[in-house]
Image (cartoon, rainbow, N blue to C red; front, top):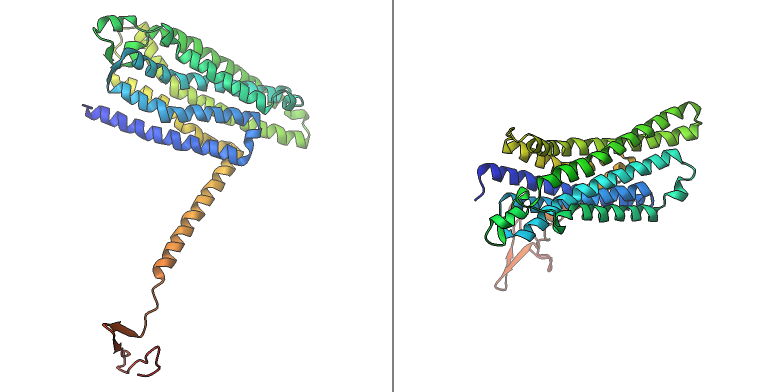
Length: 342
């Protein structure tokens, strides 16, 4: 039985999942329709959108299953909990790949197109997903809570995340090993990018100035995506670290649930950032909206036209083979349509 608080949490998760799926499907559609898939950076943005889509389509439903403590085999529970880690790793690695791509774009502008091709970008995205799968599913290879199997007399357990995933894996490996170092590298790369753009402004021609301005706008948008990622994921990692390093501190369950919801909501806000900050995606959003609006208006107008049409009524009503002559409102007889006689 789900309590009132649990029902509220699940309801929020469902709303976030719907937002993740719809928003990121729109991002993928917009990038594809705009032809931006030919640009390496947008290949990586699509990869990030796929990771965010999986959060809504798969990770959140699995998180709800874990939250209601369903009784399933131990290794099935372990697989579910490992999958919950994979989108995080894919997002971190893809964000790092995007930062490296932007740095190359600014540092080697004349050799960038020959160095960073679409084929290489897709290969890099595939490498990110392979690494994310290996890192996320590492507990399946033995780094899990063996005590849980010993404590239960059967192979089926009440599935809980912390019951199968060791806290040492979450803190030392995921947070301190796979989360903080990439973020530090990304911070350094974006600082270098902005310094490089600013230092070159004094000697830019008009054409180069426009190019640098576009690069600055795109870099700013991607930094915002990175900042939101940190803001949304850091609270959950901090809560886990506090409970690990200082077990005397009691963290209320509502704080943990808030951290989980915030981490999932990150996958929902990225499409909003793209809509307002990245020109190509913003223009395609506008086209999609206008096409949808015209279609809705057209259907409504068609429905109104159909409802306003009435069958042409004859001046005579025929029932049982008899002809009934109608009269006008003034009481005068109306002529028969066929004979022309009153």
